[in-house]
Image 1 (tube, rainbow, N blue to C red):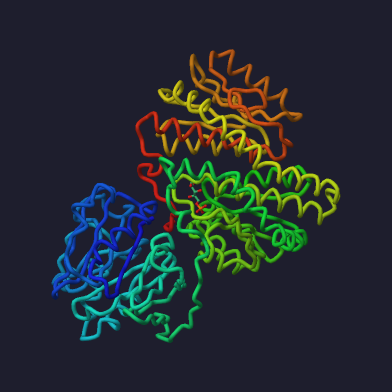
Image 2: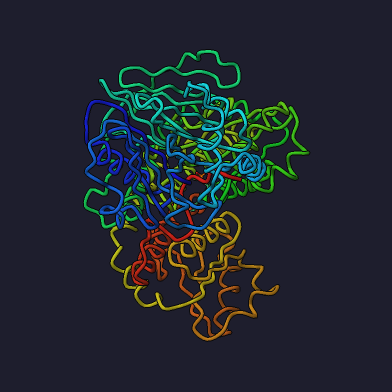
Amino acid sequence: MCGIAGYIGERENTSEILFNMLKHLEYRGYDSAGIACISDDVICISKDKGKISELEDKIHSDVVSDIGIAHTRWATHGQPSHVNAHPHTDCEEKFCVVHNGIIENHAELRDELEKKGHKFTSSTDTEVIPHLIEDFYEGDFEQAFVSAVKRLRGSFALVAVSLRDGDRILAARKESPLIIGLGDGENFIASDTPAVIHHTRNIIILDDFNYAVVLRDSVVVKDFQSGECVKKEVHRIDWDVKQAEKEGFEHFMLKEIFEEPQAVRNALKAQKDVEGIASKLAGYGRIYFVACGTAYYAALAAKYLLERFGIPSEAVLGSEFRYSTINSIDKDCAVIAVSQSGETADTLVCAKECKKKGAYLTGIVNVVGSSLTRVVDDNIHIYAGPEIAVASTKAYIGQVTSLIMLSLFIAREMNKIGEEYLREMLDNIHSVPGKMGEVLAGVDEIKKLAGEYSGKEIFFYIGRRQNYPTALEGALKIKEISYVHAEAYPAGELKHGPLALLEDGVPVIAIMPNDELLEKMESNVAEAEARNAIVLRVSEDGDFRVPVVDPLLSPLLYITPLHLFAYYISLRRGLDPDKPRNLAKSVTVE
Ligand code: F6R
């Protein structure tokens, strides 16, 4: 959802530094990009439509400069084009801004500014910001910046430079992430840590309503509402630089699928936290999950599991929760927000509103220090490490692992299961990484299957109970990276309508763990085969073969082959699985 970068220091190759920072933020948006550097009293801007890798010649110039800002865009207002690409400037090109988020009152501000004679060149919401700064400027860049920021409604992370004061970068945040990397005689600004880790491991995380004055050798953070200084903690990034590199894999997505066994092990490290949080959750009459996309499917799997233990719960999509479920939330509810990025606006706003209503709020989050982790009462980190591919894979595995563990501990606390069963299940989870390794070792078989089916334009995914979410996740993955139509259904629901779509050769992927519903699944498969559909089974002896595992853990193990399948279908269709069209990771707008 747009990536922002900024550099101020003593090095004079700012354009190159910013270009490399953008490459590490490309997962946040890739329809256009641009860089602005101050050199010899001129703001030199180079920008264009396209992916960063295609823009190297156009946006990375050799201009000598030690201060600049940059942006990679995921369009919200105004289609991807040269004029709509960031950075944007005021009428006289003295102020220059990059922005992530949505300025909700941009039309009203634009109208007001146009009446005062400001000339706009793009159709973005962002362009109002440099014009506002220009309008407020009376000799003090910081004051004009703060006055402009106070006029904005909506969500923003924004960074500005100016020829009026070429020795500082100003940055502000409300509901969109922004960090400052602290170097030695130099400082960095970015939407996320992978952009700065090659330069520094020490970061400051801006909170809502913070703005920062970033100089070469100092950073001052203030509250833009009160104007008061805010004391900030310096965080240390503790993951390895290599984790944000492809390390020999063709794509991040493939690397991340191969990290799924490790994602289980990493999530298991939080067992102590999980146990403590489960004992609190067990005291609540109602448990709700809120999440979006893939994280929602992980939450849905947990809801099925809790129900298996006789514990009622509800899993709701963030974008729906806010306008319906929220009315049922009060201090007797516990809400679990699940998010890889911890920045998804639809999930984050629900979490904030639940907190206001007095609910006990837990997060299941991957990105350490992200907004959600700072809103919740307690957090369970999944420790999956940076997930760079837009389509979530290893984080899903981490989320499902944490949620299975959490459900088991809640069930034990509520006396729905005994200690012995709990320990047996924990041992079973510990055996999953090895079994996933066996699935991954069969990658060539899956690649072959993908080759056979890559020409199909429709896929059905079916599963029952806790594997209905597995079907949803399998279908979403193929939709988003292969642009193929895929439908996911609870298997018993096929006959209530969708069966009409099954005809000769339509692939139906059936998730069939060896449990008491297997016979029911066989009947559903027979219904599909009777319509000449081609059924591909994910089972112990199926087309996608998985080792024997306790059926309650099948949502973990049975998705890995489907992640690989989606990846190879995408490749066979000549697409870039890491950067699906129209999408971006970390959706920070509602
Ligand atoms: C799908 C995918 C998205 C995200 C969703 C929530 O592969 O990645 O559906 O799962 O946008 O994102 P987080 O987990 O960051 O809240």
